[in-house]
Every structure is written in C-alpha cells, then in structure tokens.
Figure 1 (cartoon, rainbow, N blue to C red):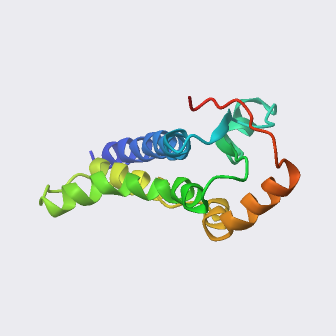
Figure 2 (cartoon, one colour):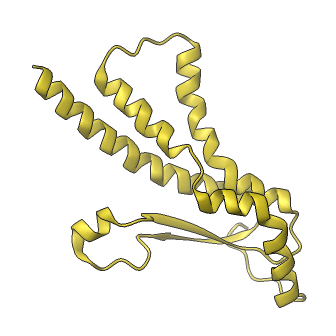
Amino acid sequence: MIETEVAVAGGALVLAVATGLVAHEWLHALTLRLARIDYTVTYFPDRTDGVVGLLASCPWAAVRPHPTGREPAWQLRAAALSPFLLAAPVFALGIRGVPVESPVVTAIGIGWLACSIPSPQDFSVAFYAHRALESESVREPNTAPASCAD
C-alpha cells in the first residue's frame, strides 16, 4: 500500500509543478496586463526535439515584456515578483490549521510552493528594471506599440 501512495504522490508532485509553472507565467502576464505593458507569452520556446526533449527543457513558458521606456520601474518589478502570490493559498491553509497528513497533499503543496519562487531572470528584472527602461527609451523614444493589454 505504501508503494502506491508514494507513486501517486510523485504523480501529484509532477502535476502540481506543471500547473504551477503555467500559473507562474500567467501571473507575470496578468501583472503586465494590469500595468498596460505590452508582452508576449511563448510556450516551449525554440523547442522541436520531440516530447522528451520538450518536457526536459527549460523554460516551458516565457513572458517577455515590451516596455516603451515610459513606464515606471515599479510596474516591471511587480510583474517580475508576482509569482510570490502563488504561495498565499498554501500559507493560508497552513495558518488555518488544515492538516496535511497525506503524502499526496504534501507533494502538491511542495510542488506549488516551488513554482512560487521567482526565477533568476525574474530577480534580474526586479533589481535592474530601471536600466531596462532606460535602454528602451534610448532605442525608441517616440514610438508607442499597440498593446495587447487594452
């Protein structure tokens, strides 16, 4: 019986991570949309190596903002750090005292929390958003691209 429970917990962990990765990128996109910053979402960017290569590669999805250079840096910082919000439901359940006696529930919580950690690229945007905006304003001072956030 224990072996079955561990196998189910492993499957639940994989499912939670896959779902969490998509939610992670969608939170970036949602924050950019609310800030009215144009962006593109790409799933499995530059991957054509078959199913195993597709699943083993990183990243599975990417959100690339297209700022005009006139946005405040805090908006890009908020979008970069927005995946921290994924931790809120897990911590709320913990604070309410919901018991976690099942390895399946524990695996789901761990997988979901793992996806709430911003990536190194996210932290780079958070720390250097002002530089990215300065370089954008130098490149395109008078253009305003059509936004998919409207």
